[in-house]
Image 1 (cartoon, rainbow, N blue to C red):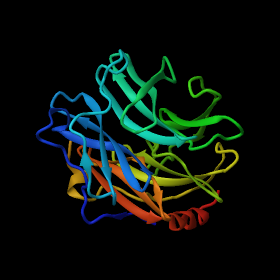
Image 2: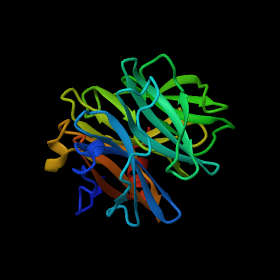
Image 3: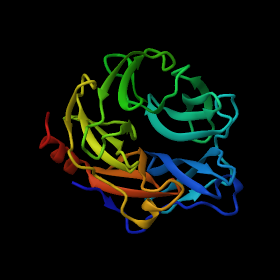
Image 4: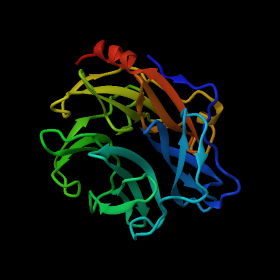
Length: 293
């Protein structure tokens, strides 16, 4: 199965009047809350330092955005940018996982908010290691918080009692030799809970550095068990703005909210603009059930 691109793509472009987002807007978190889509997107100006901006939409296609970023580099682990946010709501609080980039490397970081505009940093949650593509499950599993992250080239799972200290790290998904995701893989948006298991949209990279999106199904009670994984990608670079940009041949997602049974996959195209593609959640589940492991 394949995601269906929206005909009005791309849905968010750089803003030439705002120096902090004049070059690229991409790799956004999106959550559907109180009847609206809320987007927290990575933005770069000509200095290539990443900030996180905020935009809101009724339909996921037409967006109104703030003039200034809601999160900018501040701490010593962020001096070169705050990148690739993902938003998960747990018990009425919004948690943003994001990557802090500095001469120290790339650090898996966390912030929280009650209004999606004002963010309180909680710090680096996987210290002393380069790590990214980290995303929280939307509820506790076995009484503990659960997190997907990437120690290259695999997707890992970890657990925590307080969101700050993570243990029980283990690999749950690996690249597949000879396939479209043979070089490295990473989690996309928050896993989607269904009665069949957790649907995970992830990105895979091949030896030519082409980024595509795929889908897997994790066990509901033990997400370290991968129950199904599609053989073919559900989205790959095809449009000009997905092929040519700041980084060519990239579709990369940090968000897959479900609204009235439809999965909205928001993705960065070639690290320059934002697009959206959709599919019925049931269609993705049906495809995964044909690929049970």
